[in-house]
Length: 222
Ligand SMILES: [Zn+2]
Image (cartoon, rainbow, N blue to C red; front, side, top):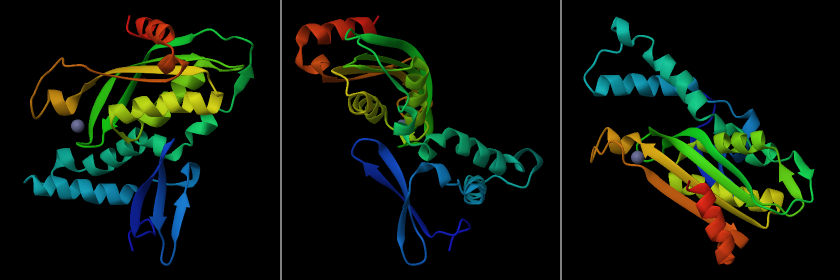
C-alpha cells in the first residue's frame, strides 16, 4: 500500500471533460472527482530523490536536500487542475440576449506536456456565439487554467475548451486557437527554439458556416 493509502492511481478520460482521478483502495475501485483528492507529496518526494540518484547525483548534498519537497509542492501547484471540476467554473452564467460573437484573446497559460513532463506555454484565444447564455470573462480565463494545470497535450486542451463552451453554455458556436512554445521541443530533441505550435478547434456554427468560421479565425489569429 502506498503512502497515500491507495495502491494504484489511474486516470479515466471522460469524453468531454478529461481527467477524473481513480484510485484503487484495498478492495474497491473508487472514482474521486476533484475537490477531495490530495496530492501524495511524499510519493513525489521519493520519486524525485530516486531520479537524482539515478542521474548520478547525491540527493543529500546541500543544494539538493530540499529539492524533492520543493518539486512536490511545485507539482501540486502545476497539476492543481486535476482537483477542480471544470464544469463548476462554468456555473455562473448570465442570461443575455446577445447572439454575436464574443472574443477573448491573449489568455496566457502554462501547462505540462504529458509526454515529457516539461512545460509548454503560450496564449489561448477564445470565441463563442452565445445562445441566450454568456459567462464572465474571468470564468473563461479560469477554465483555461483548470484544463491547463494537468498533464496535457495542446491538441486536447484546445478541444476541451471548445467542447465545454458548447456544452455548458449551449453556445451556437465556438472557436479556440492556442499558440504555444513547448520546452520539450526547444530544450531537447530537435532543439528548435522559437517554434510555435498552433492548434485550433471549431464547433457548431463556427464549423458549419464558412463566413462565421472565417470571421472567428480572422479575429483569433490577429
Ligand atoms: Zn513533450
